[in-house]
Image 1 (cartoon, rainbow, N blue to C red):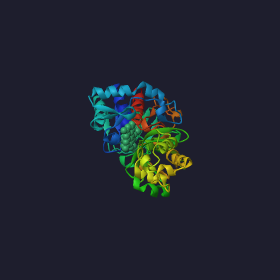
Image 2 (image 1 turned 90 degrees about the vertical axis):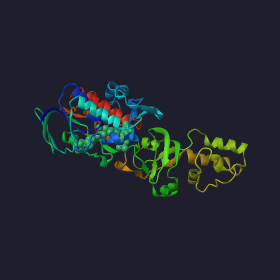
Image 3 (image 1 turned 90 degrees about the horizontal axis):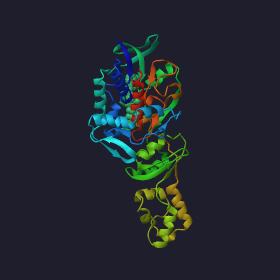
Image 4 (image 1 turned 180 degrees about the vertical axis):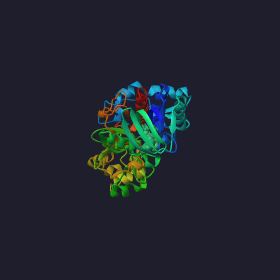
Length: 391
Ligand SMILES: Cc1cc2nc3c(=O)[nH]c(=O)nc-3n(C[C@H](O)[C@H](O)[C@H](O)COP(=O)(O)OP(=O)(O)OC[C@H]3O[C@@H](n4cnc5c(N)ncnc54)[C@H](O)[C@@H]3O)c2cc1C
């Protein structure tokens, strides 16, 4: 089959690119090996798709080239996507940190994209295995289980490695490698931490407890909820820092981010010497967490029995808790893949390969990884849109 554009990957970035290219009158075919389009859109945001954020900038992205994402993000912004969502009358709401979610279902976003594709005459072929892509003088030939496609432009929108059961594959990196592109080493991002055996036993009883925390490493700091789970630590603050975490490294956790804990304990000691340490700390933290954190410290003793130095040590353990994760839960549960196709070999304006004319990489397969909060979809929309203007 001869066409203008073949897009591989029928999800966020691929469908946006397809709708835009189709709208320009290009003949577009989208191929995907999954049995339905947009599986990750459907499972995103707990089923409600955190489709963008009110406050988007390059600072919300991780990349070896931190400037690369600016062009696409500034040309197709969160306001453009919100306008599209509003045109479809999809109800949405804002949550903390400017995150926008559908009121009803992520399906609304997928249906909107599929409808945009339908209106633009895009053809989507599912259950399609790609065997081979070759560059020819006229463009590309794509050998697949649904036959041979010939196109002037080929867009790789196959995402990253996270959640293999949702049809994630290394295909995009392989195609990039085939055409001589460098891949920035990949690792799971937005992923829960697993704990060292000692910590696992210590915190086993705390599964389900969530506390507002500040979590930092040498590069960055986040403040949101931390969640103890049966497997380790999760919650938004852990997912955020995980994208910046290197194996073997410790993170510093402040469980009382609004407090000078030592000063506060001293003041309470002066005012209420007979109050028990655990009761006083219980104003801020769940009792089970206090017991696990204080270890051998006699938390049932009255404040008057503690020296100021011990208060300082207790404050240190609660506000500068040095945790060295055992690892992460890996791609099985990671929301994204950090790393990917090196930005330096792509045009930031069009996402076209600088090595092979007519070859494009959009969305998560590129070395641009967003924070939690709708940033990854915004990158998929913006990069897909940018390529859609030129393919
Ligand atoms: C559980 C979960 C929740 C998330 N929630 C949010 C959220 O609320 N907000 C947010 O911004 N981000 C969220 N993300 C991240 C977001 O889903 C991704 O960043 C985004 O989907 C990337 O879009 P993409 O089109 O580049 O890739 P994907 O959405 O991963 O799509 C890639 C497509 O390519 C296809 N494909 C892969 N390999 C092949 C192959 N070999 N042959 C043919 N087709 C192939 C796949 O089937 C898929 O359809 C979430 C991710 C997960 C896993």
